[in-house]
Image (cartoon, rainbow, N blue to C red):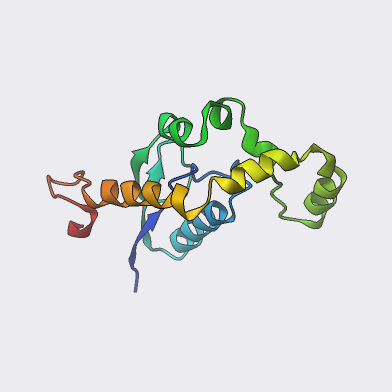
Length: 146
């Protein structure tokens, strides 16, 4: 038996391997890949540059939205690359340990402060409101009509 999965990307990142500082984003990528490998249908709702393995990619936001929330440096200068590492193997972990000096603690603190309830809750509400009102298949209104 196969199922249809509606996967919500994080409203703060594109679902790509480049967003290594967001464990939730990485879980989304791997979940979509795993469900597709098992033969299920996957709808991904998220950033237009997301690179998840899915049957249907529904674009909810883009880099302009990320810049509005995180600031211009986040997208254009890719400051998120200086706040963490993606380690899949022991070799990756050793490389990360040897490169720990490239992490900018002040930038990590600034990023963490963006995740306070007061900061993130309105963004999630807007994101879910956008998903709720999607009109993309046969003139049906909302993801719940699929």
